[in-house]
Image (cartoon, rainbow, N blue to C red; front, side):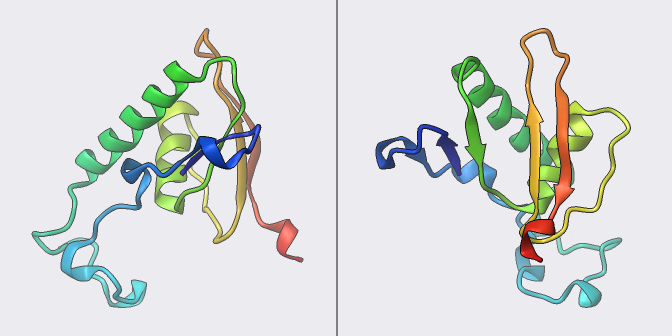
Length: 121
């Protein structure tokens, strides 16, 4: 979900392309029960997933260059953004964490807050 930080109800956008990776018939299974080396054929290909995420972020960035935008999504989406736009970053994304980054027109994007869940304490 993308939310313009002026936060009126009229500018909330539910973006289907920000959904977590489709695990197909493995959806709903416990992590420990999934064979990640041999995923079901009906699961979303990792390259397709990552491409979908990058395309939607690039689209929203182009449309909102001078705005602050709040994105609420899943850890796989956040991990994809961090790995794609912030070289060398490979972080564990805790549930209900907050990650803050700033996109820049010149491509000098900044990771302001690494995935953090201290607000839960």
